[in-house]
Image (cartoon, helix red, strand yellow):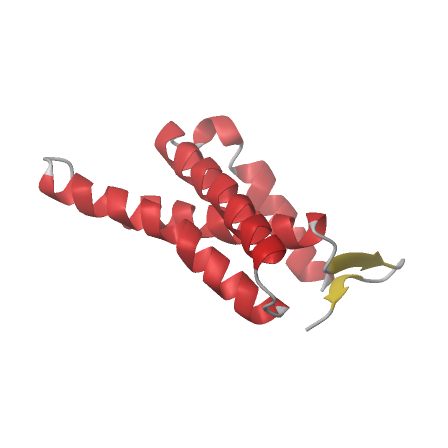
Length: 120
């Protein structure tokens, strides 16, 4: 676990945000906002349990990013797998943030471990 945390910190510090293409940052941010919005709407309108709600809201948040890439392919620029990756990571981040905000997940921390717990 310490090795994983070390590698994540190393990766984040090795690639600062200004070194990442602005297009990828916008895809990540857009996916995050859509993931948070979709998860919050589904949380308050449906009686679905957590895994189903997270998968559906993540999929719904991912659709606009995929559509943008398809349009890019036919409009002169090319389909970018990296943009799609940024969309997916942003959607997943937004969904997890939505679950945390809506009260279904908790972060539990001890001196040796940090974990997400909740109703599965």
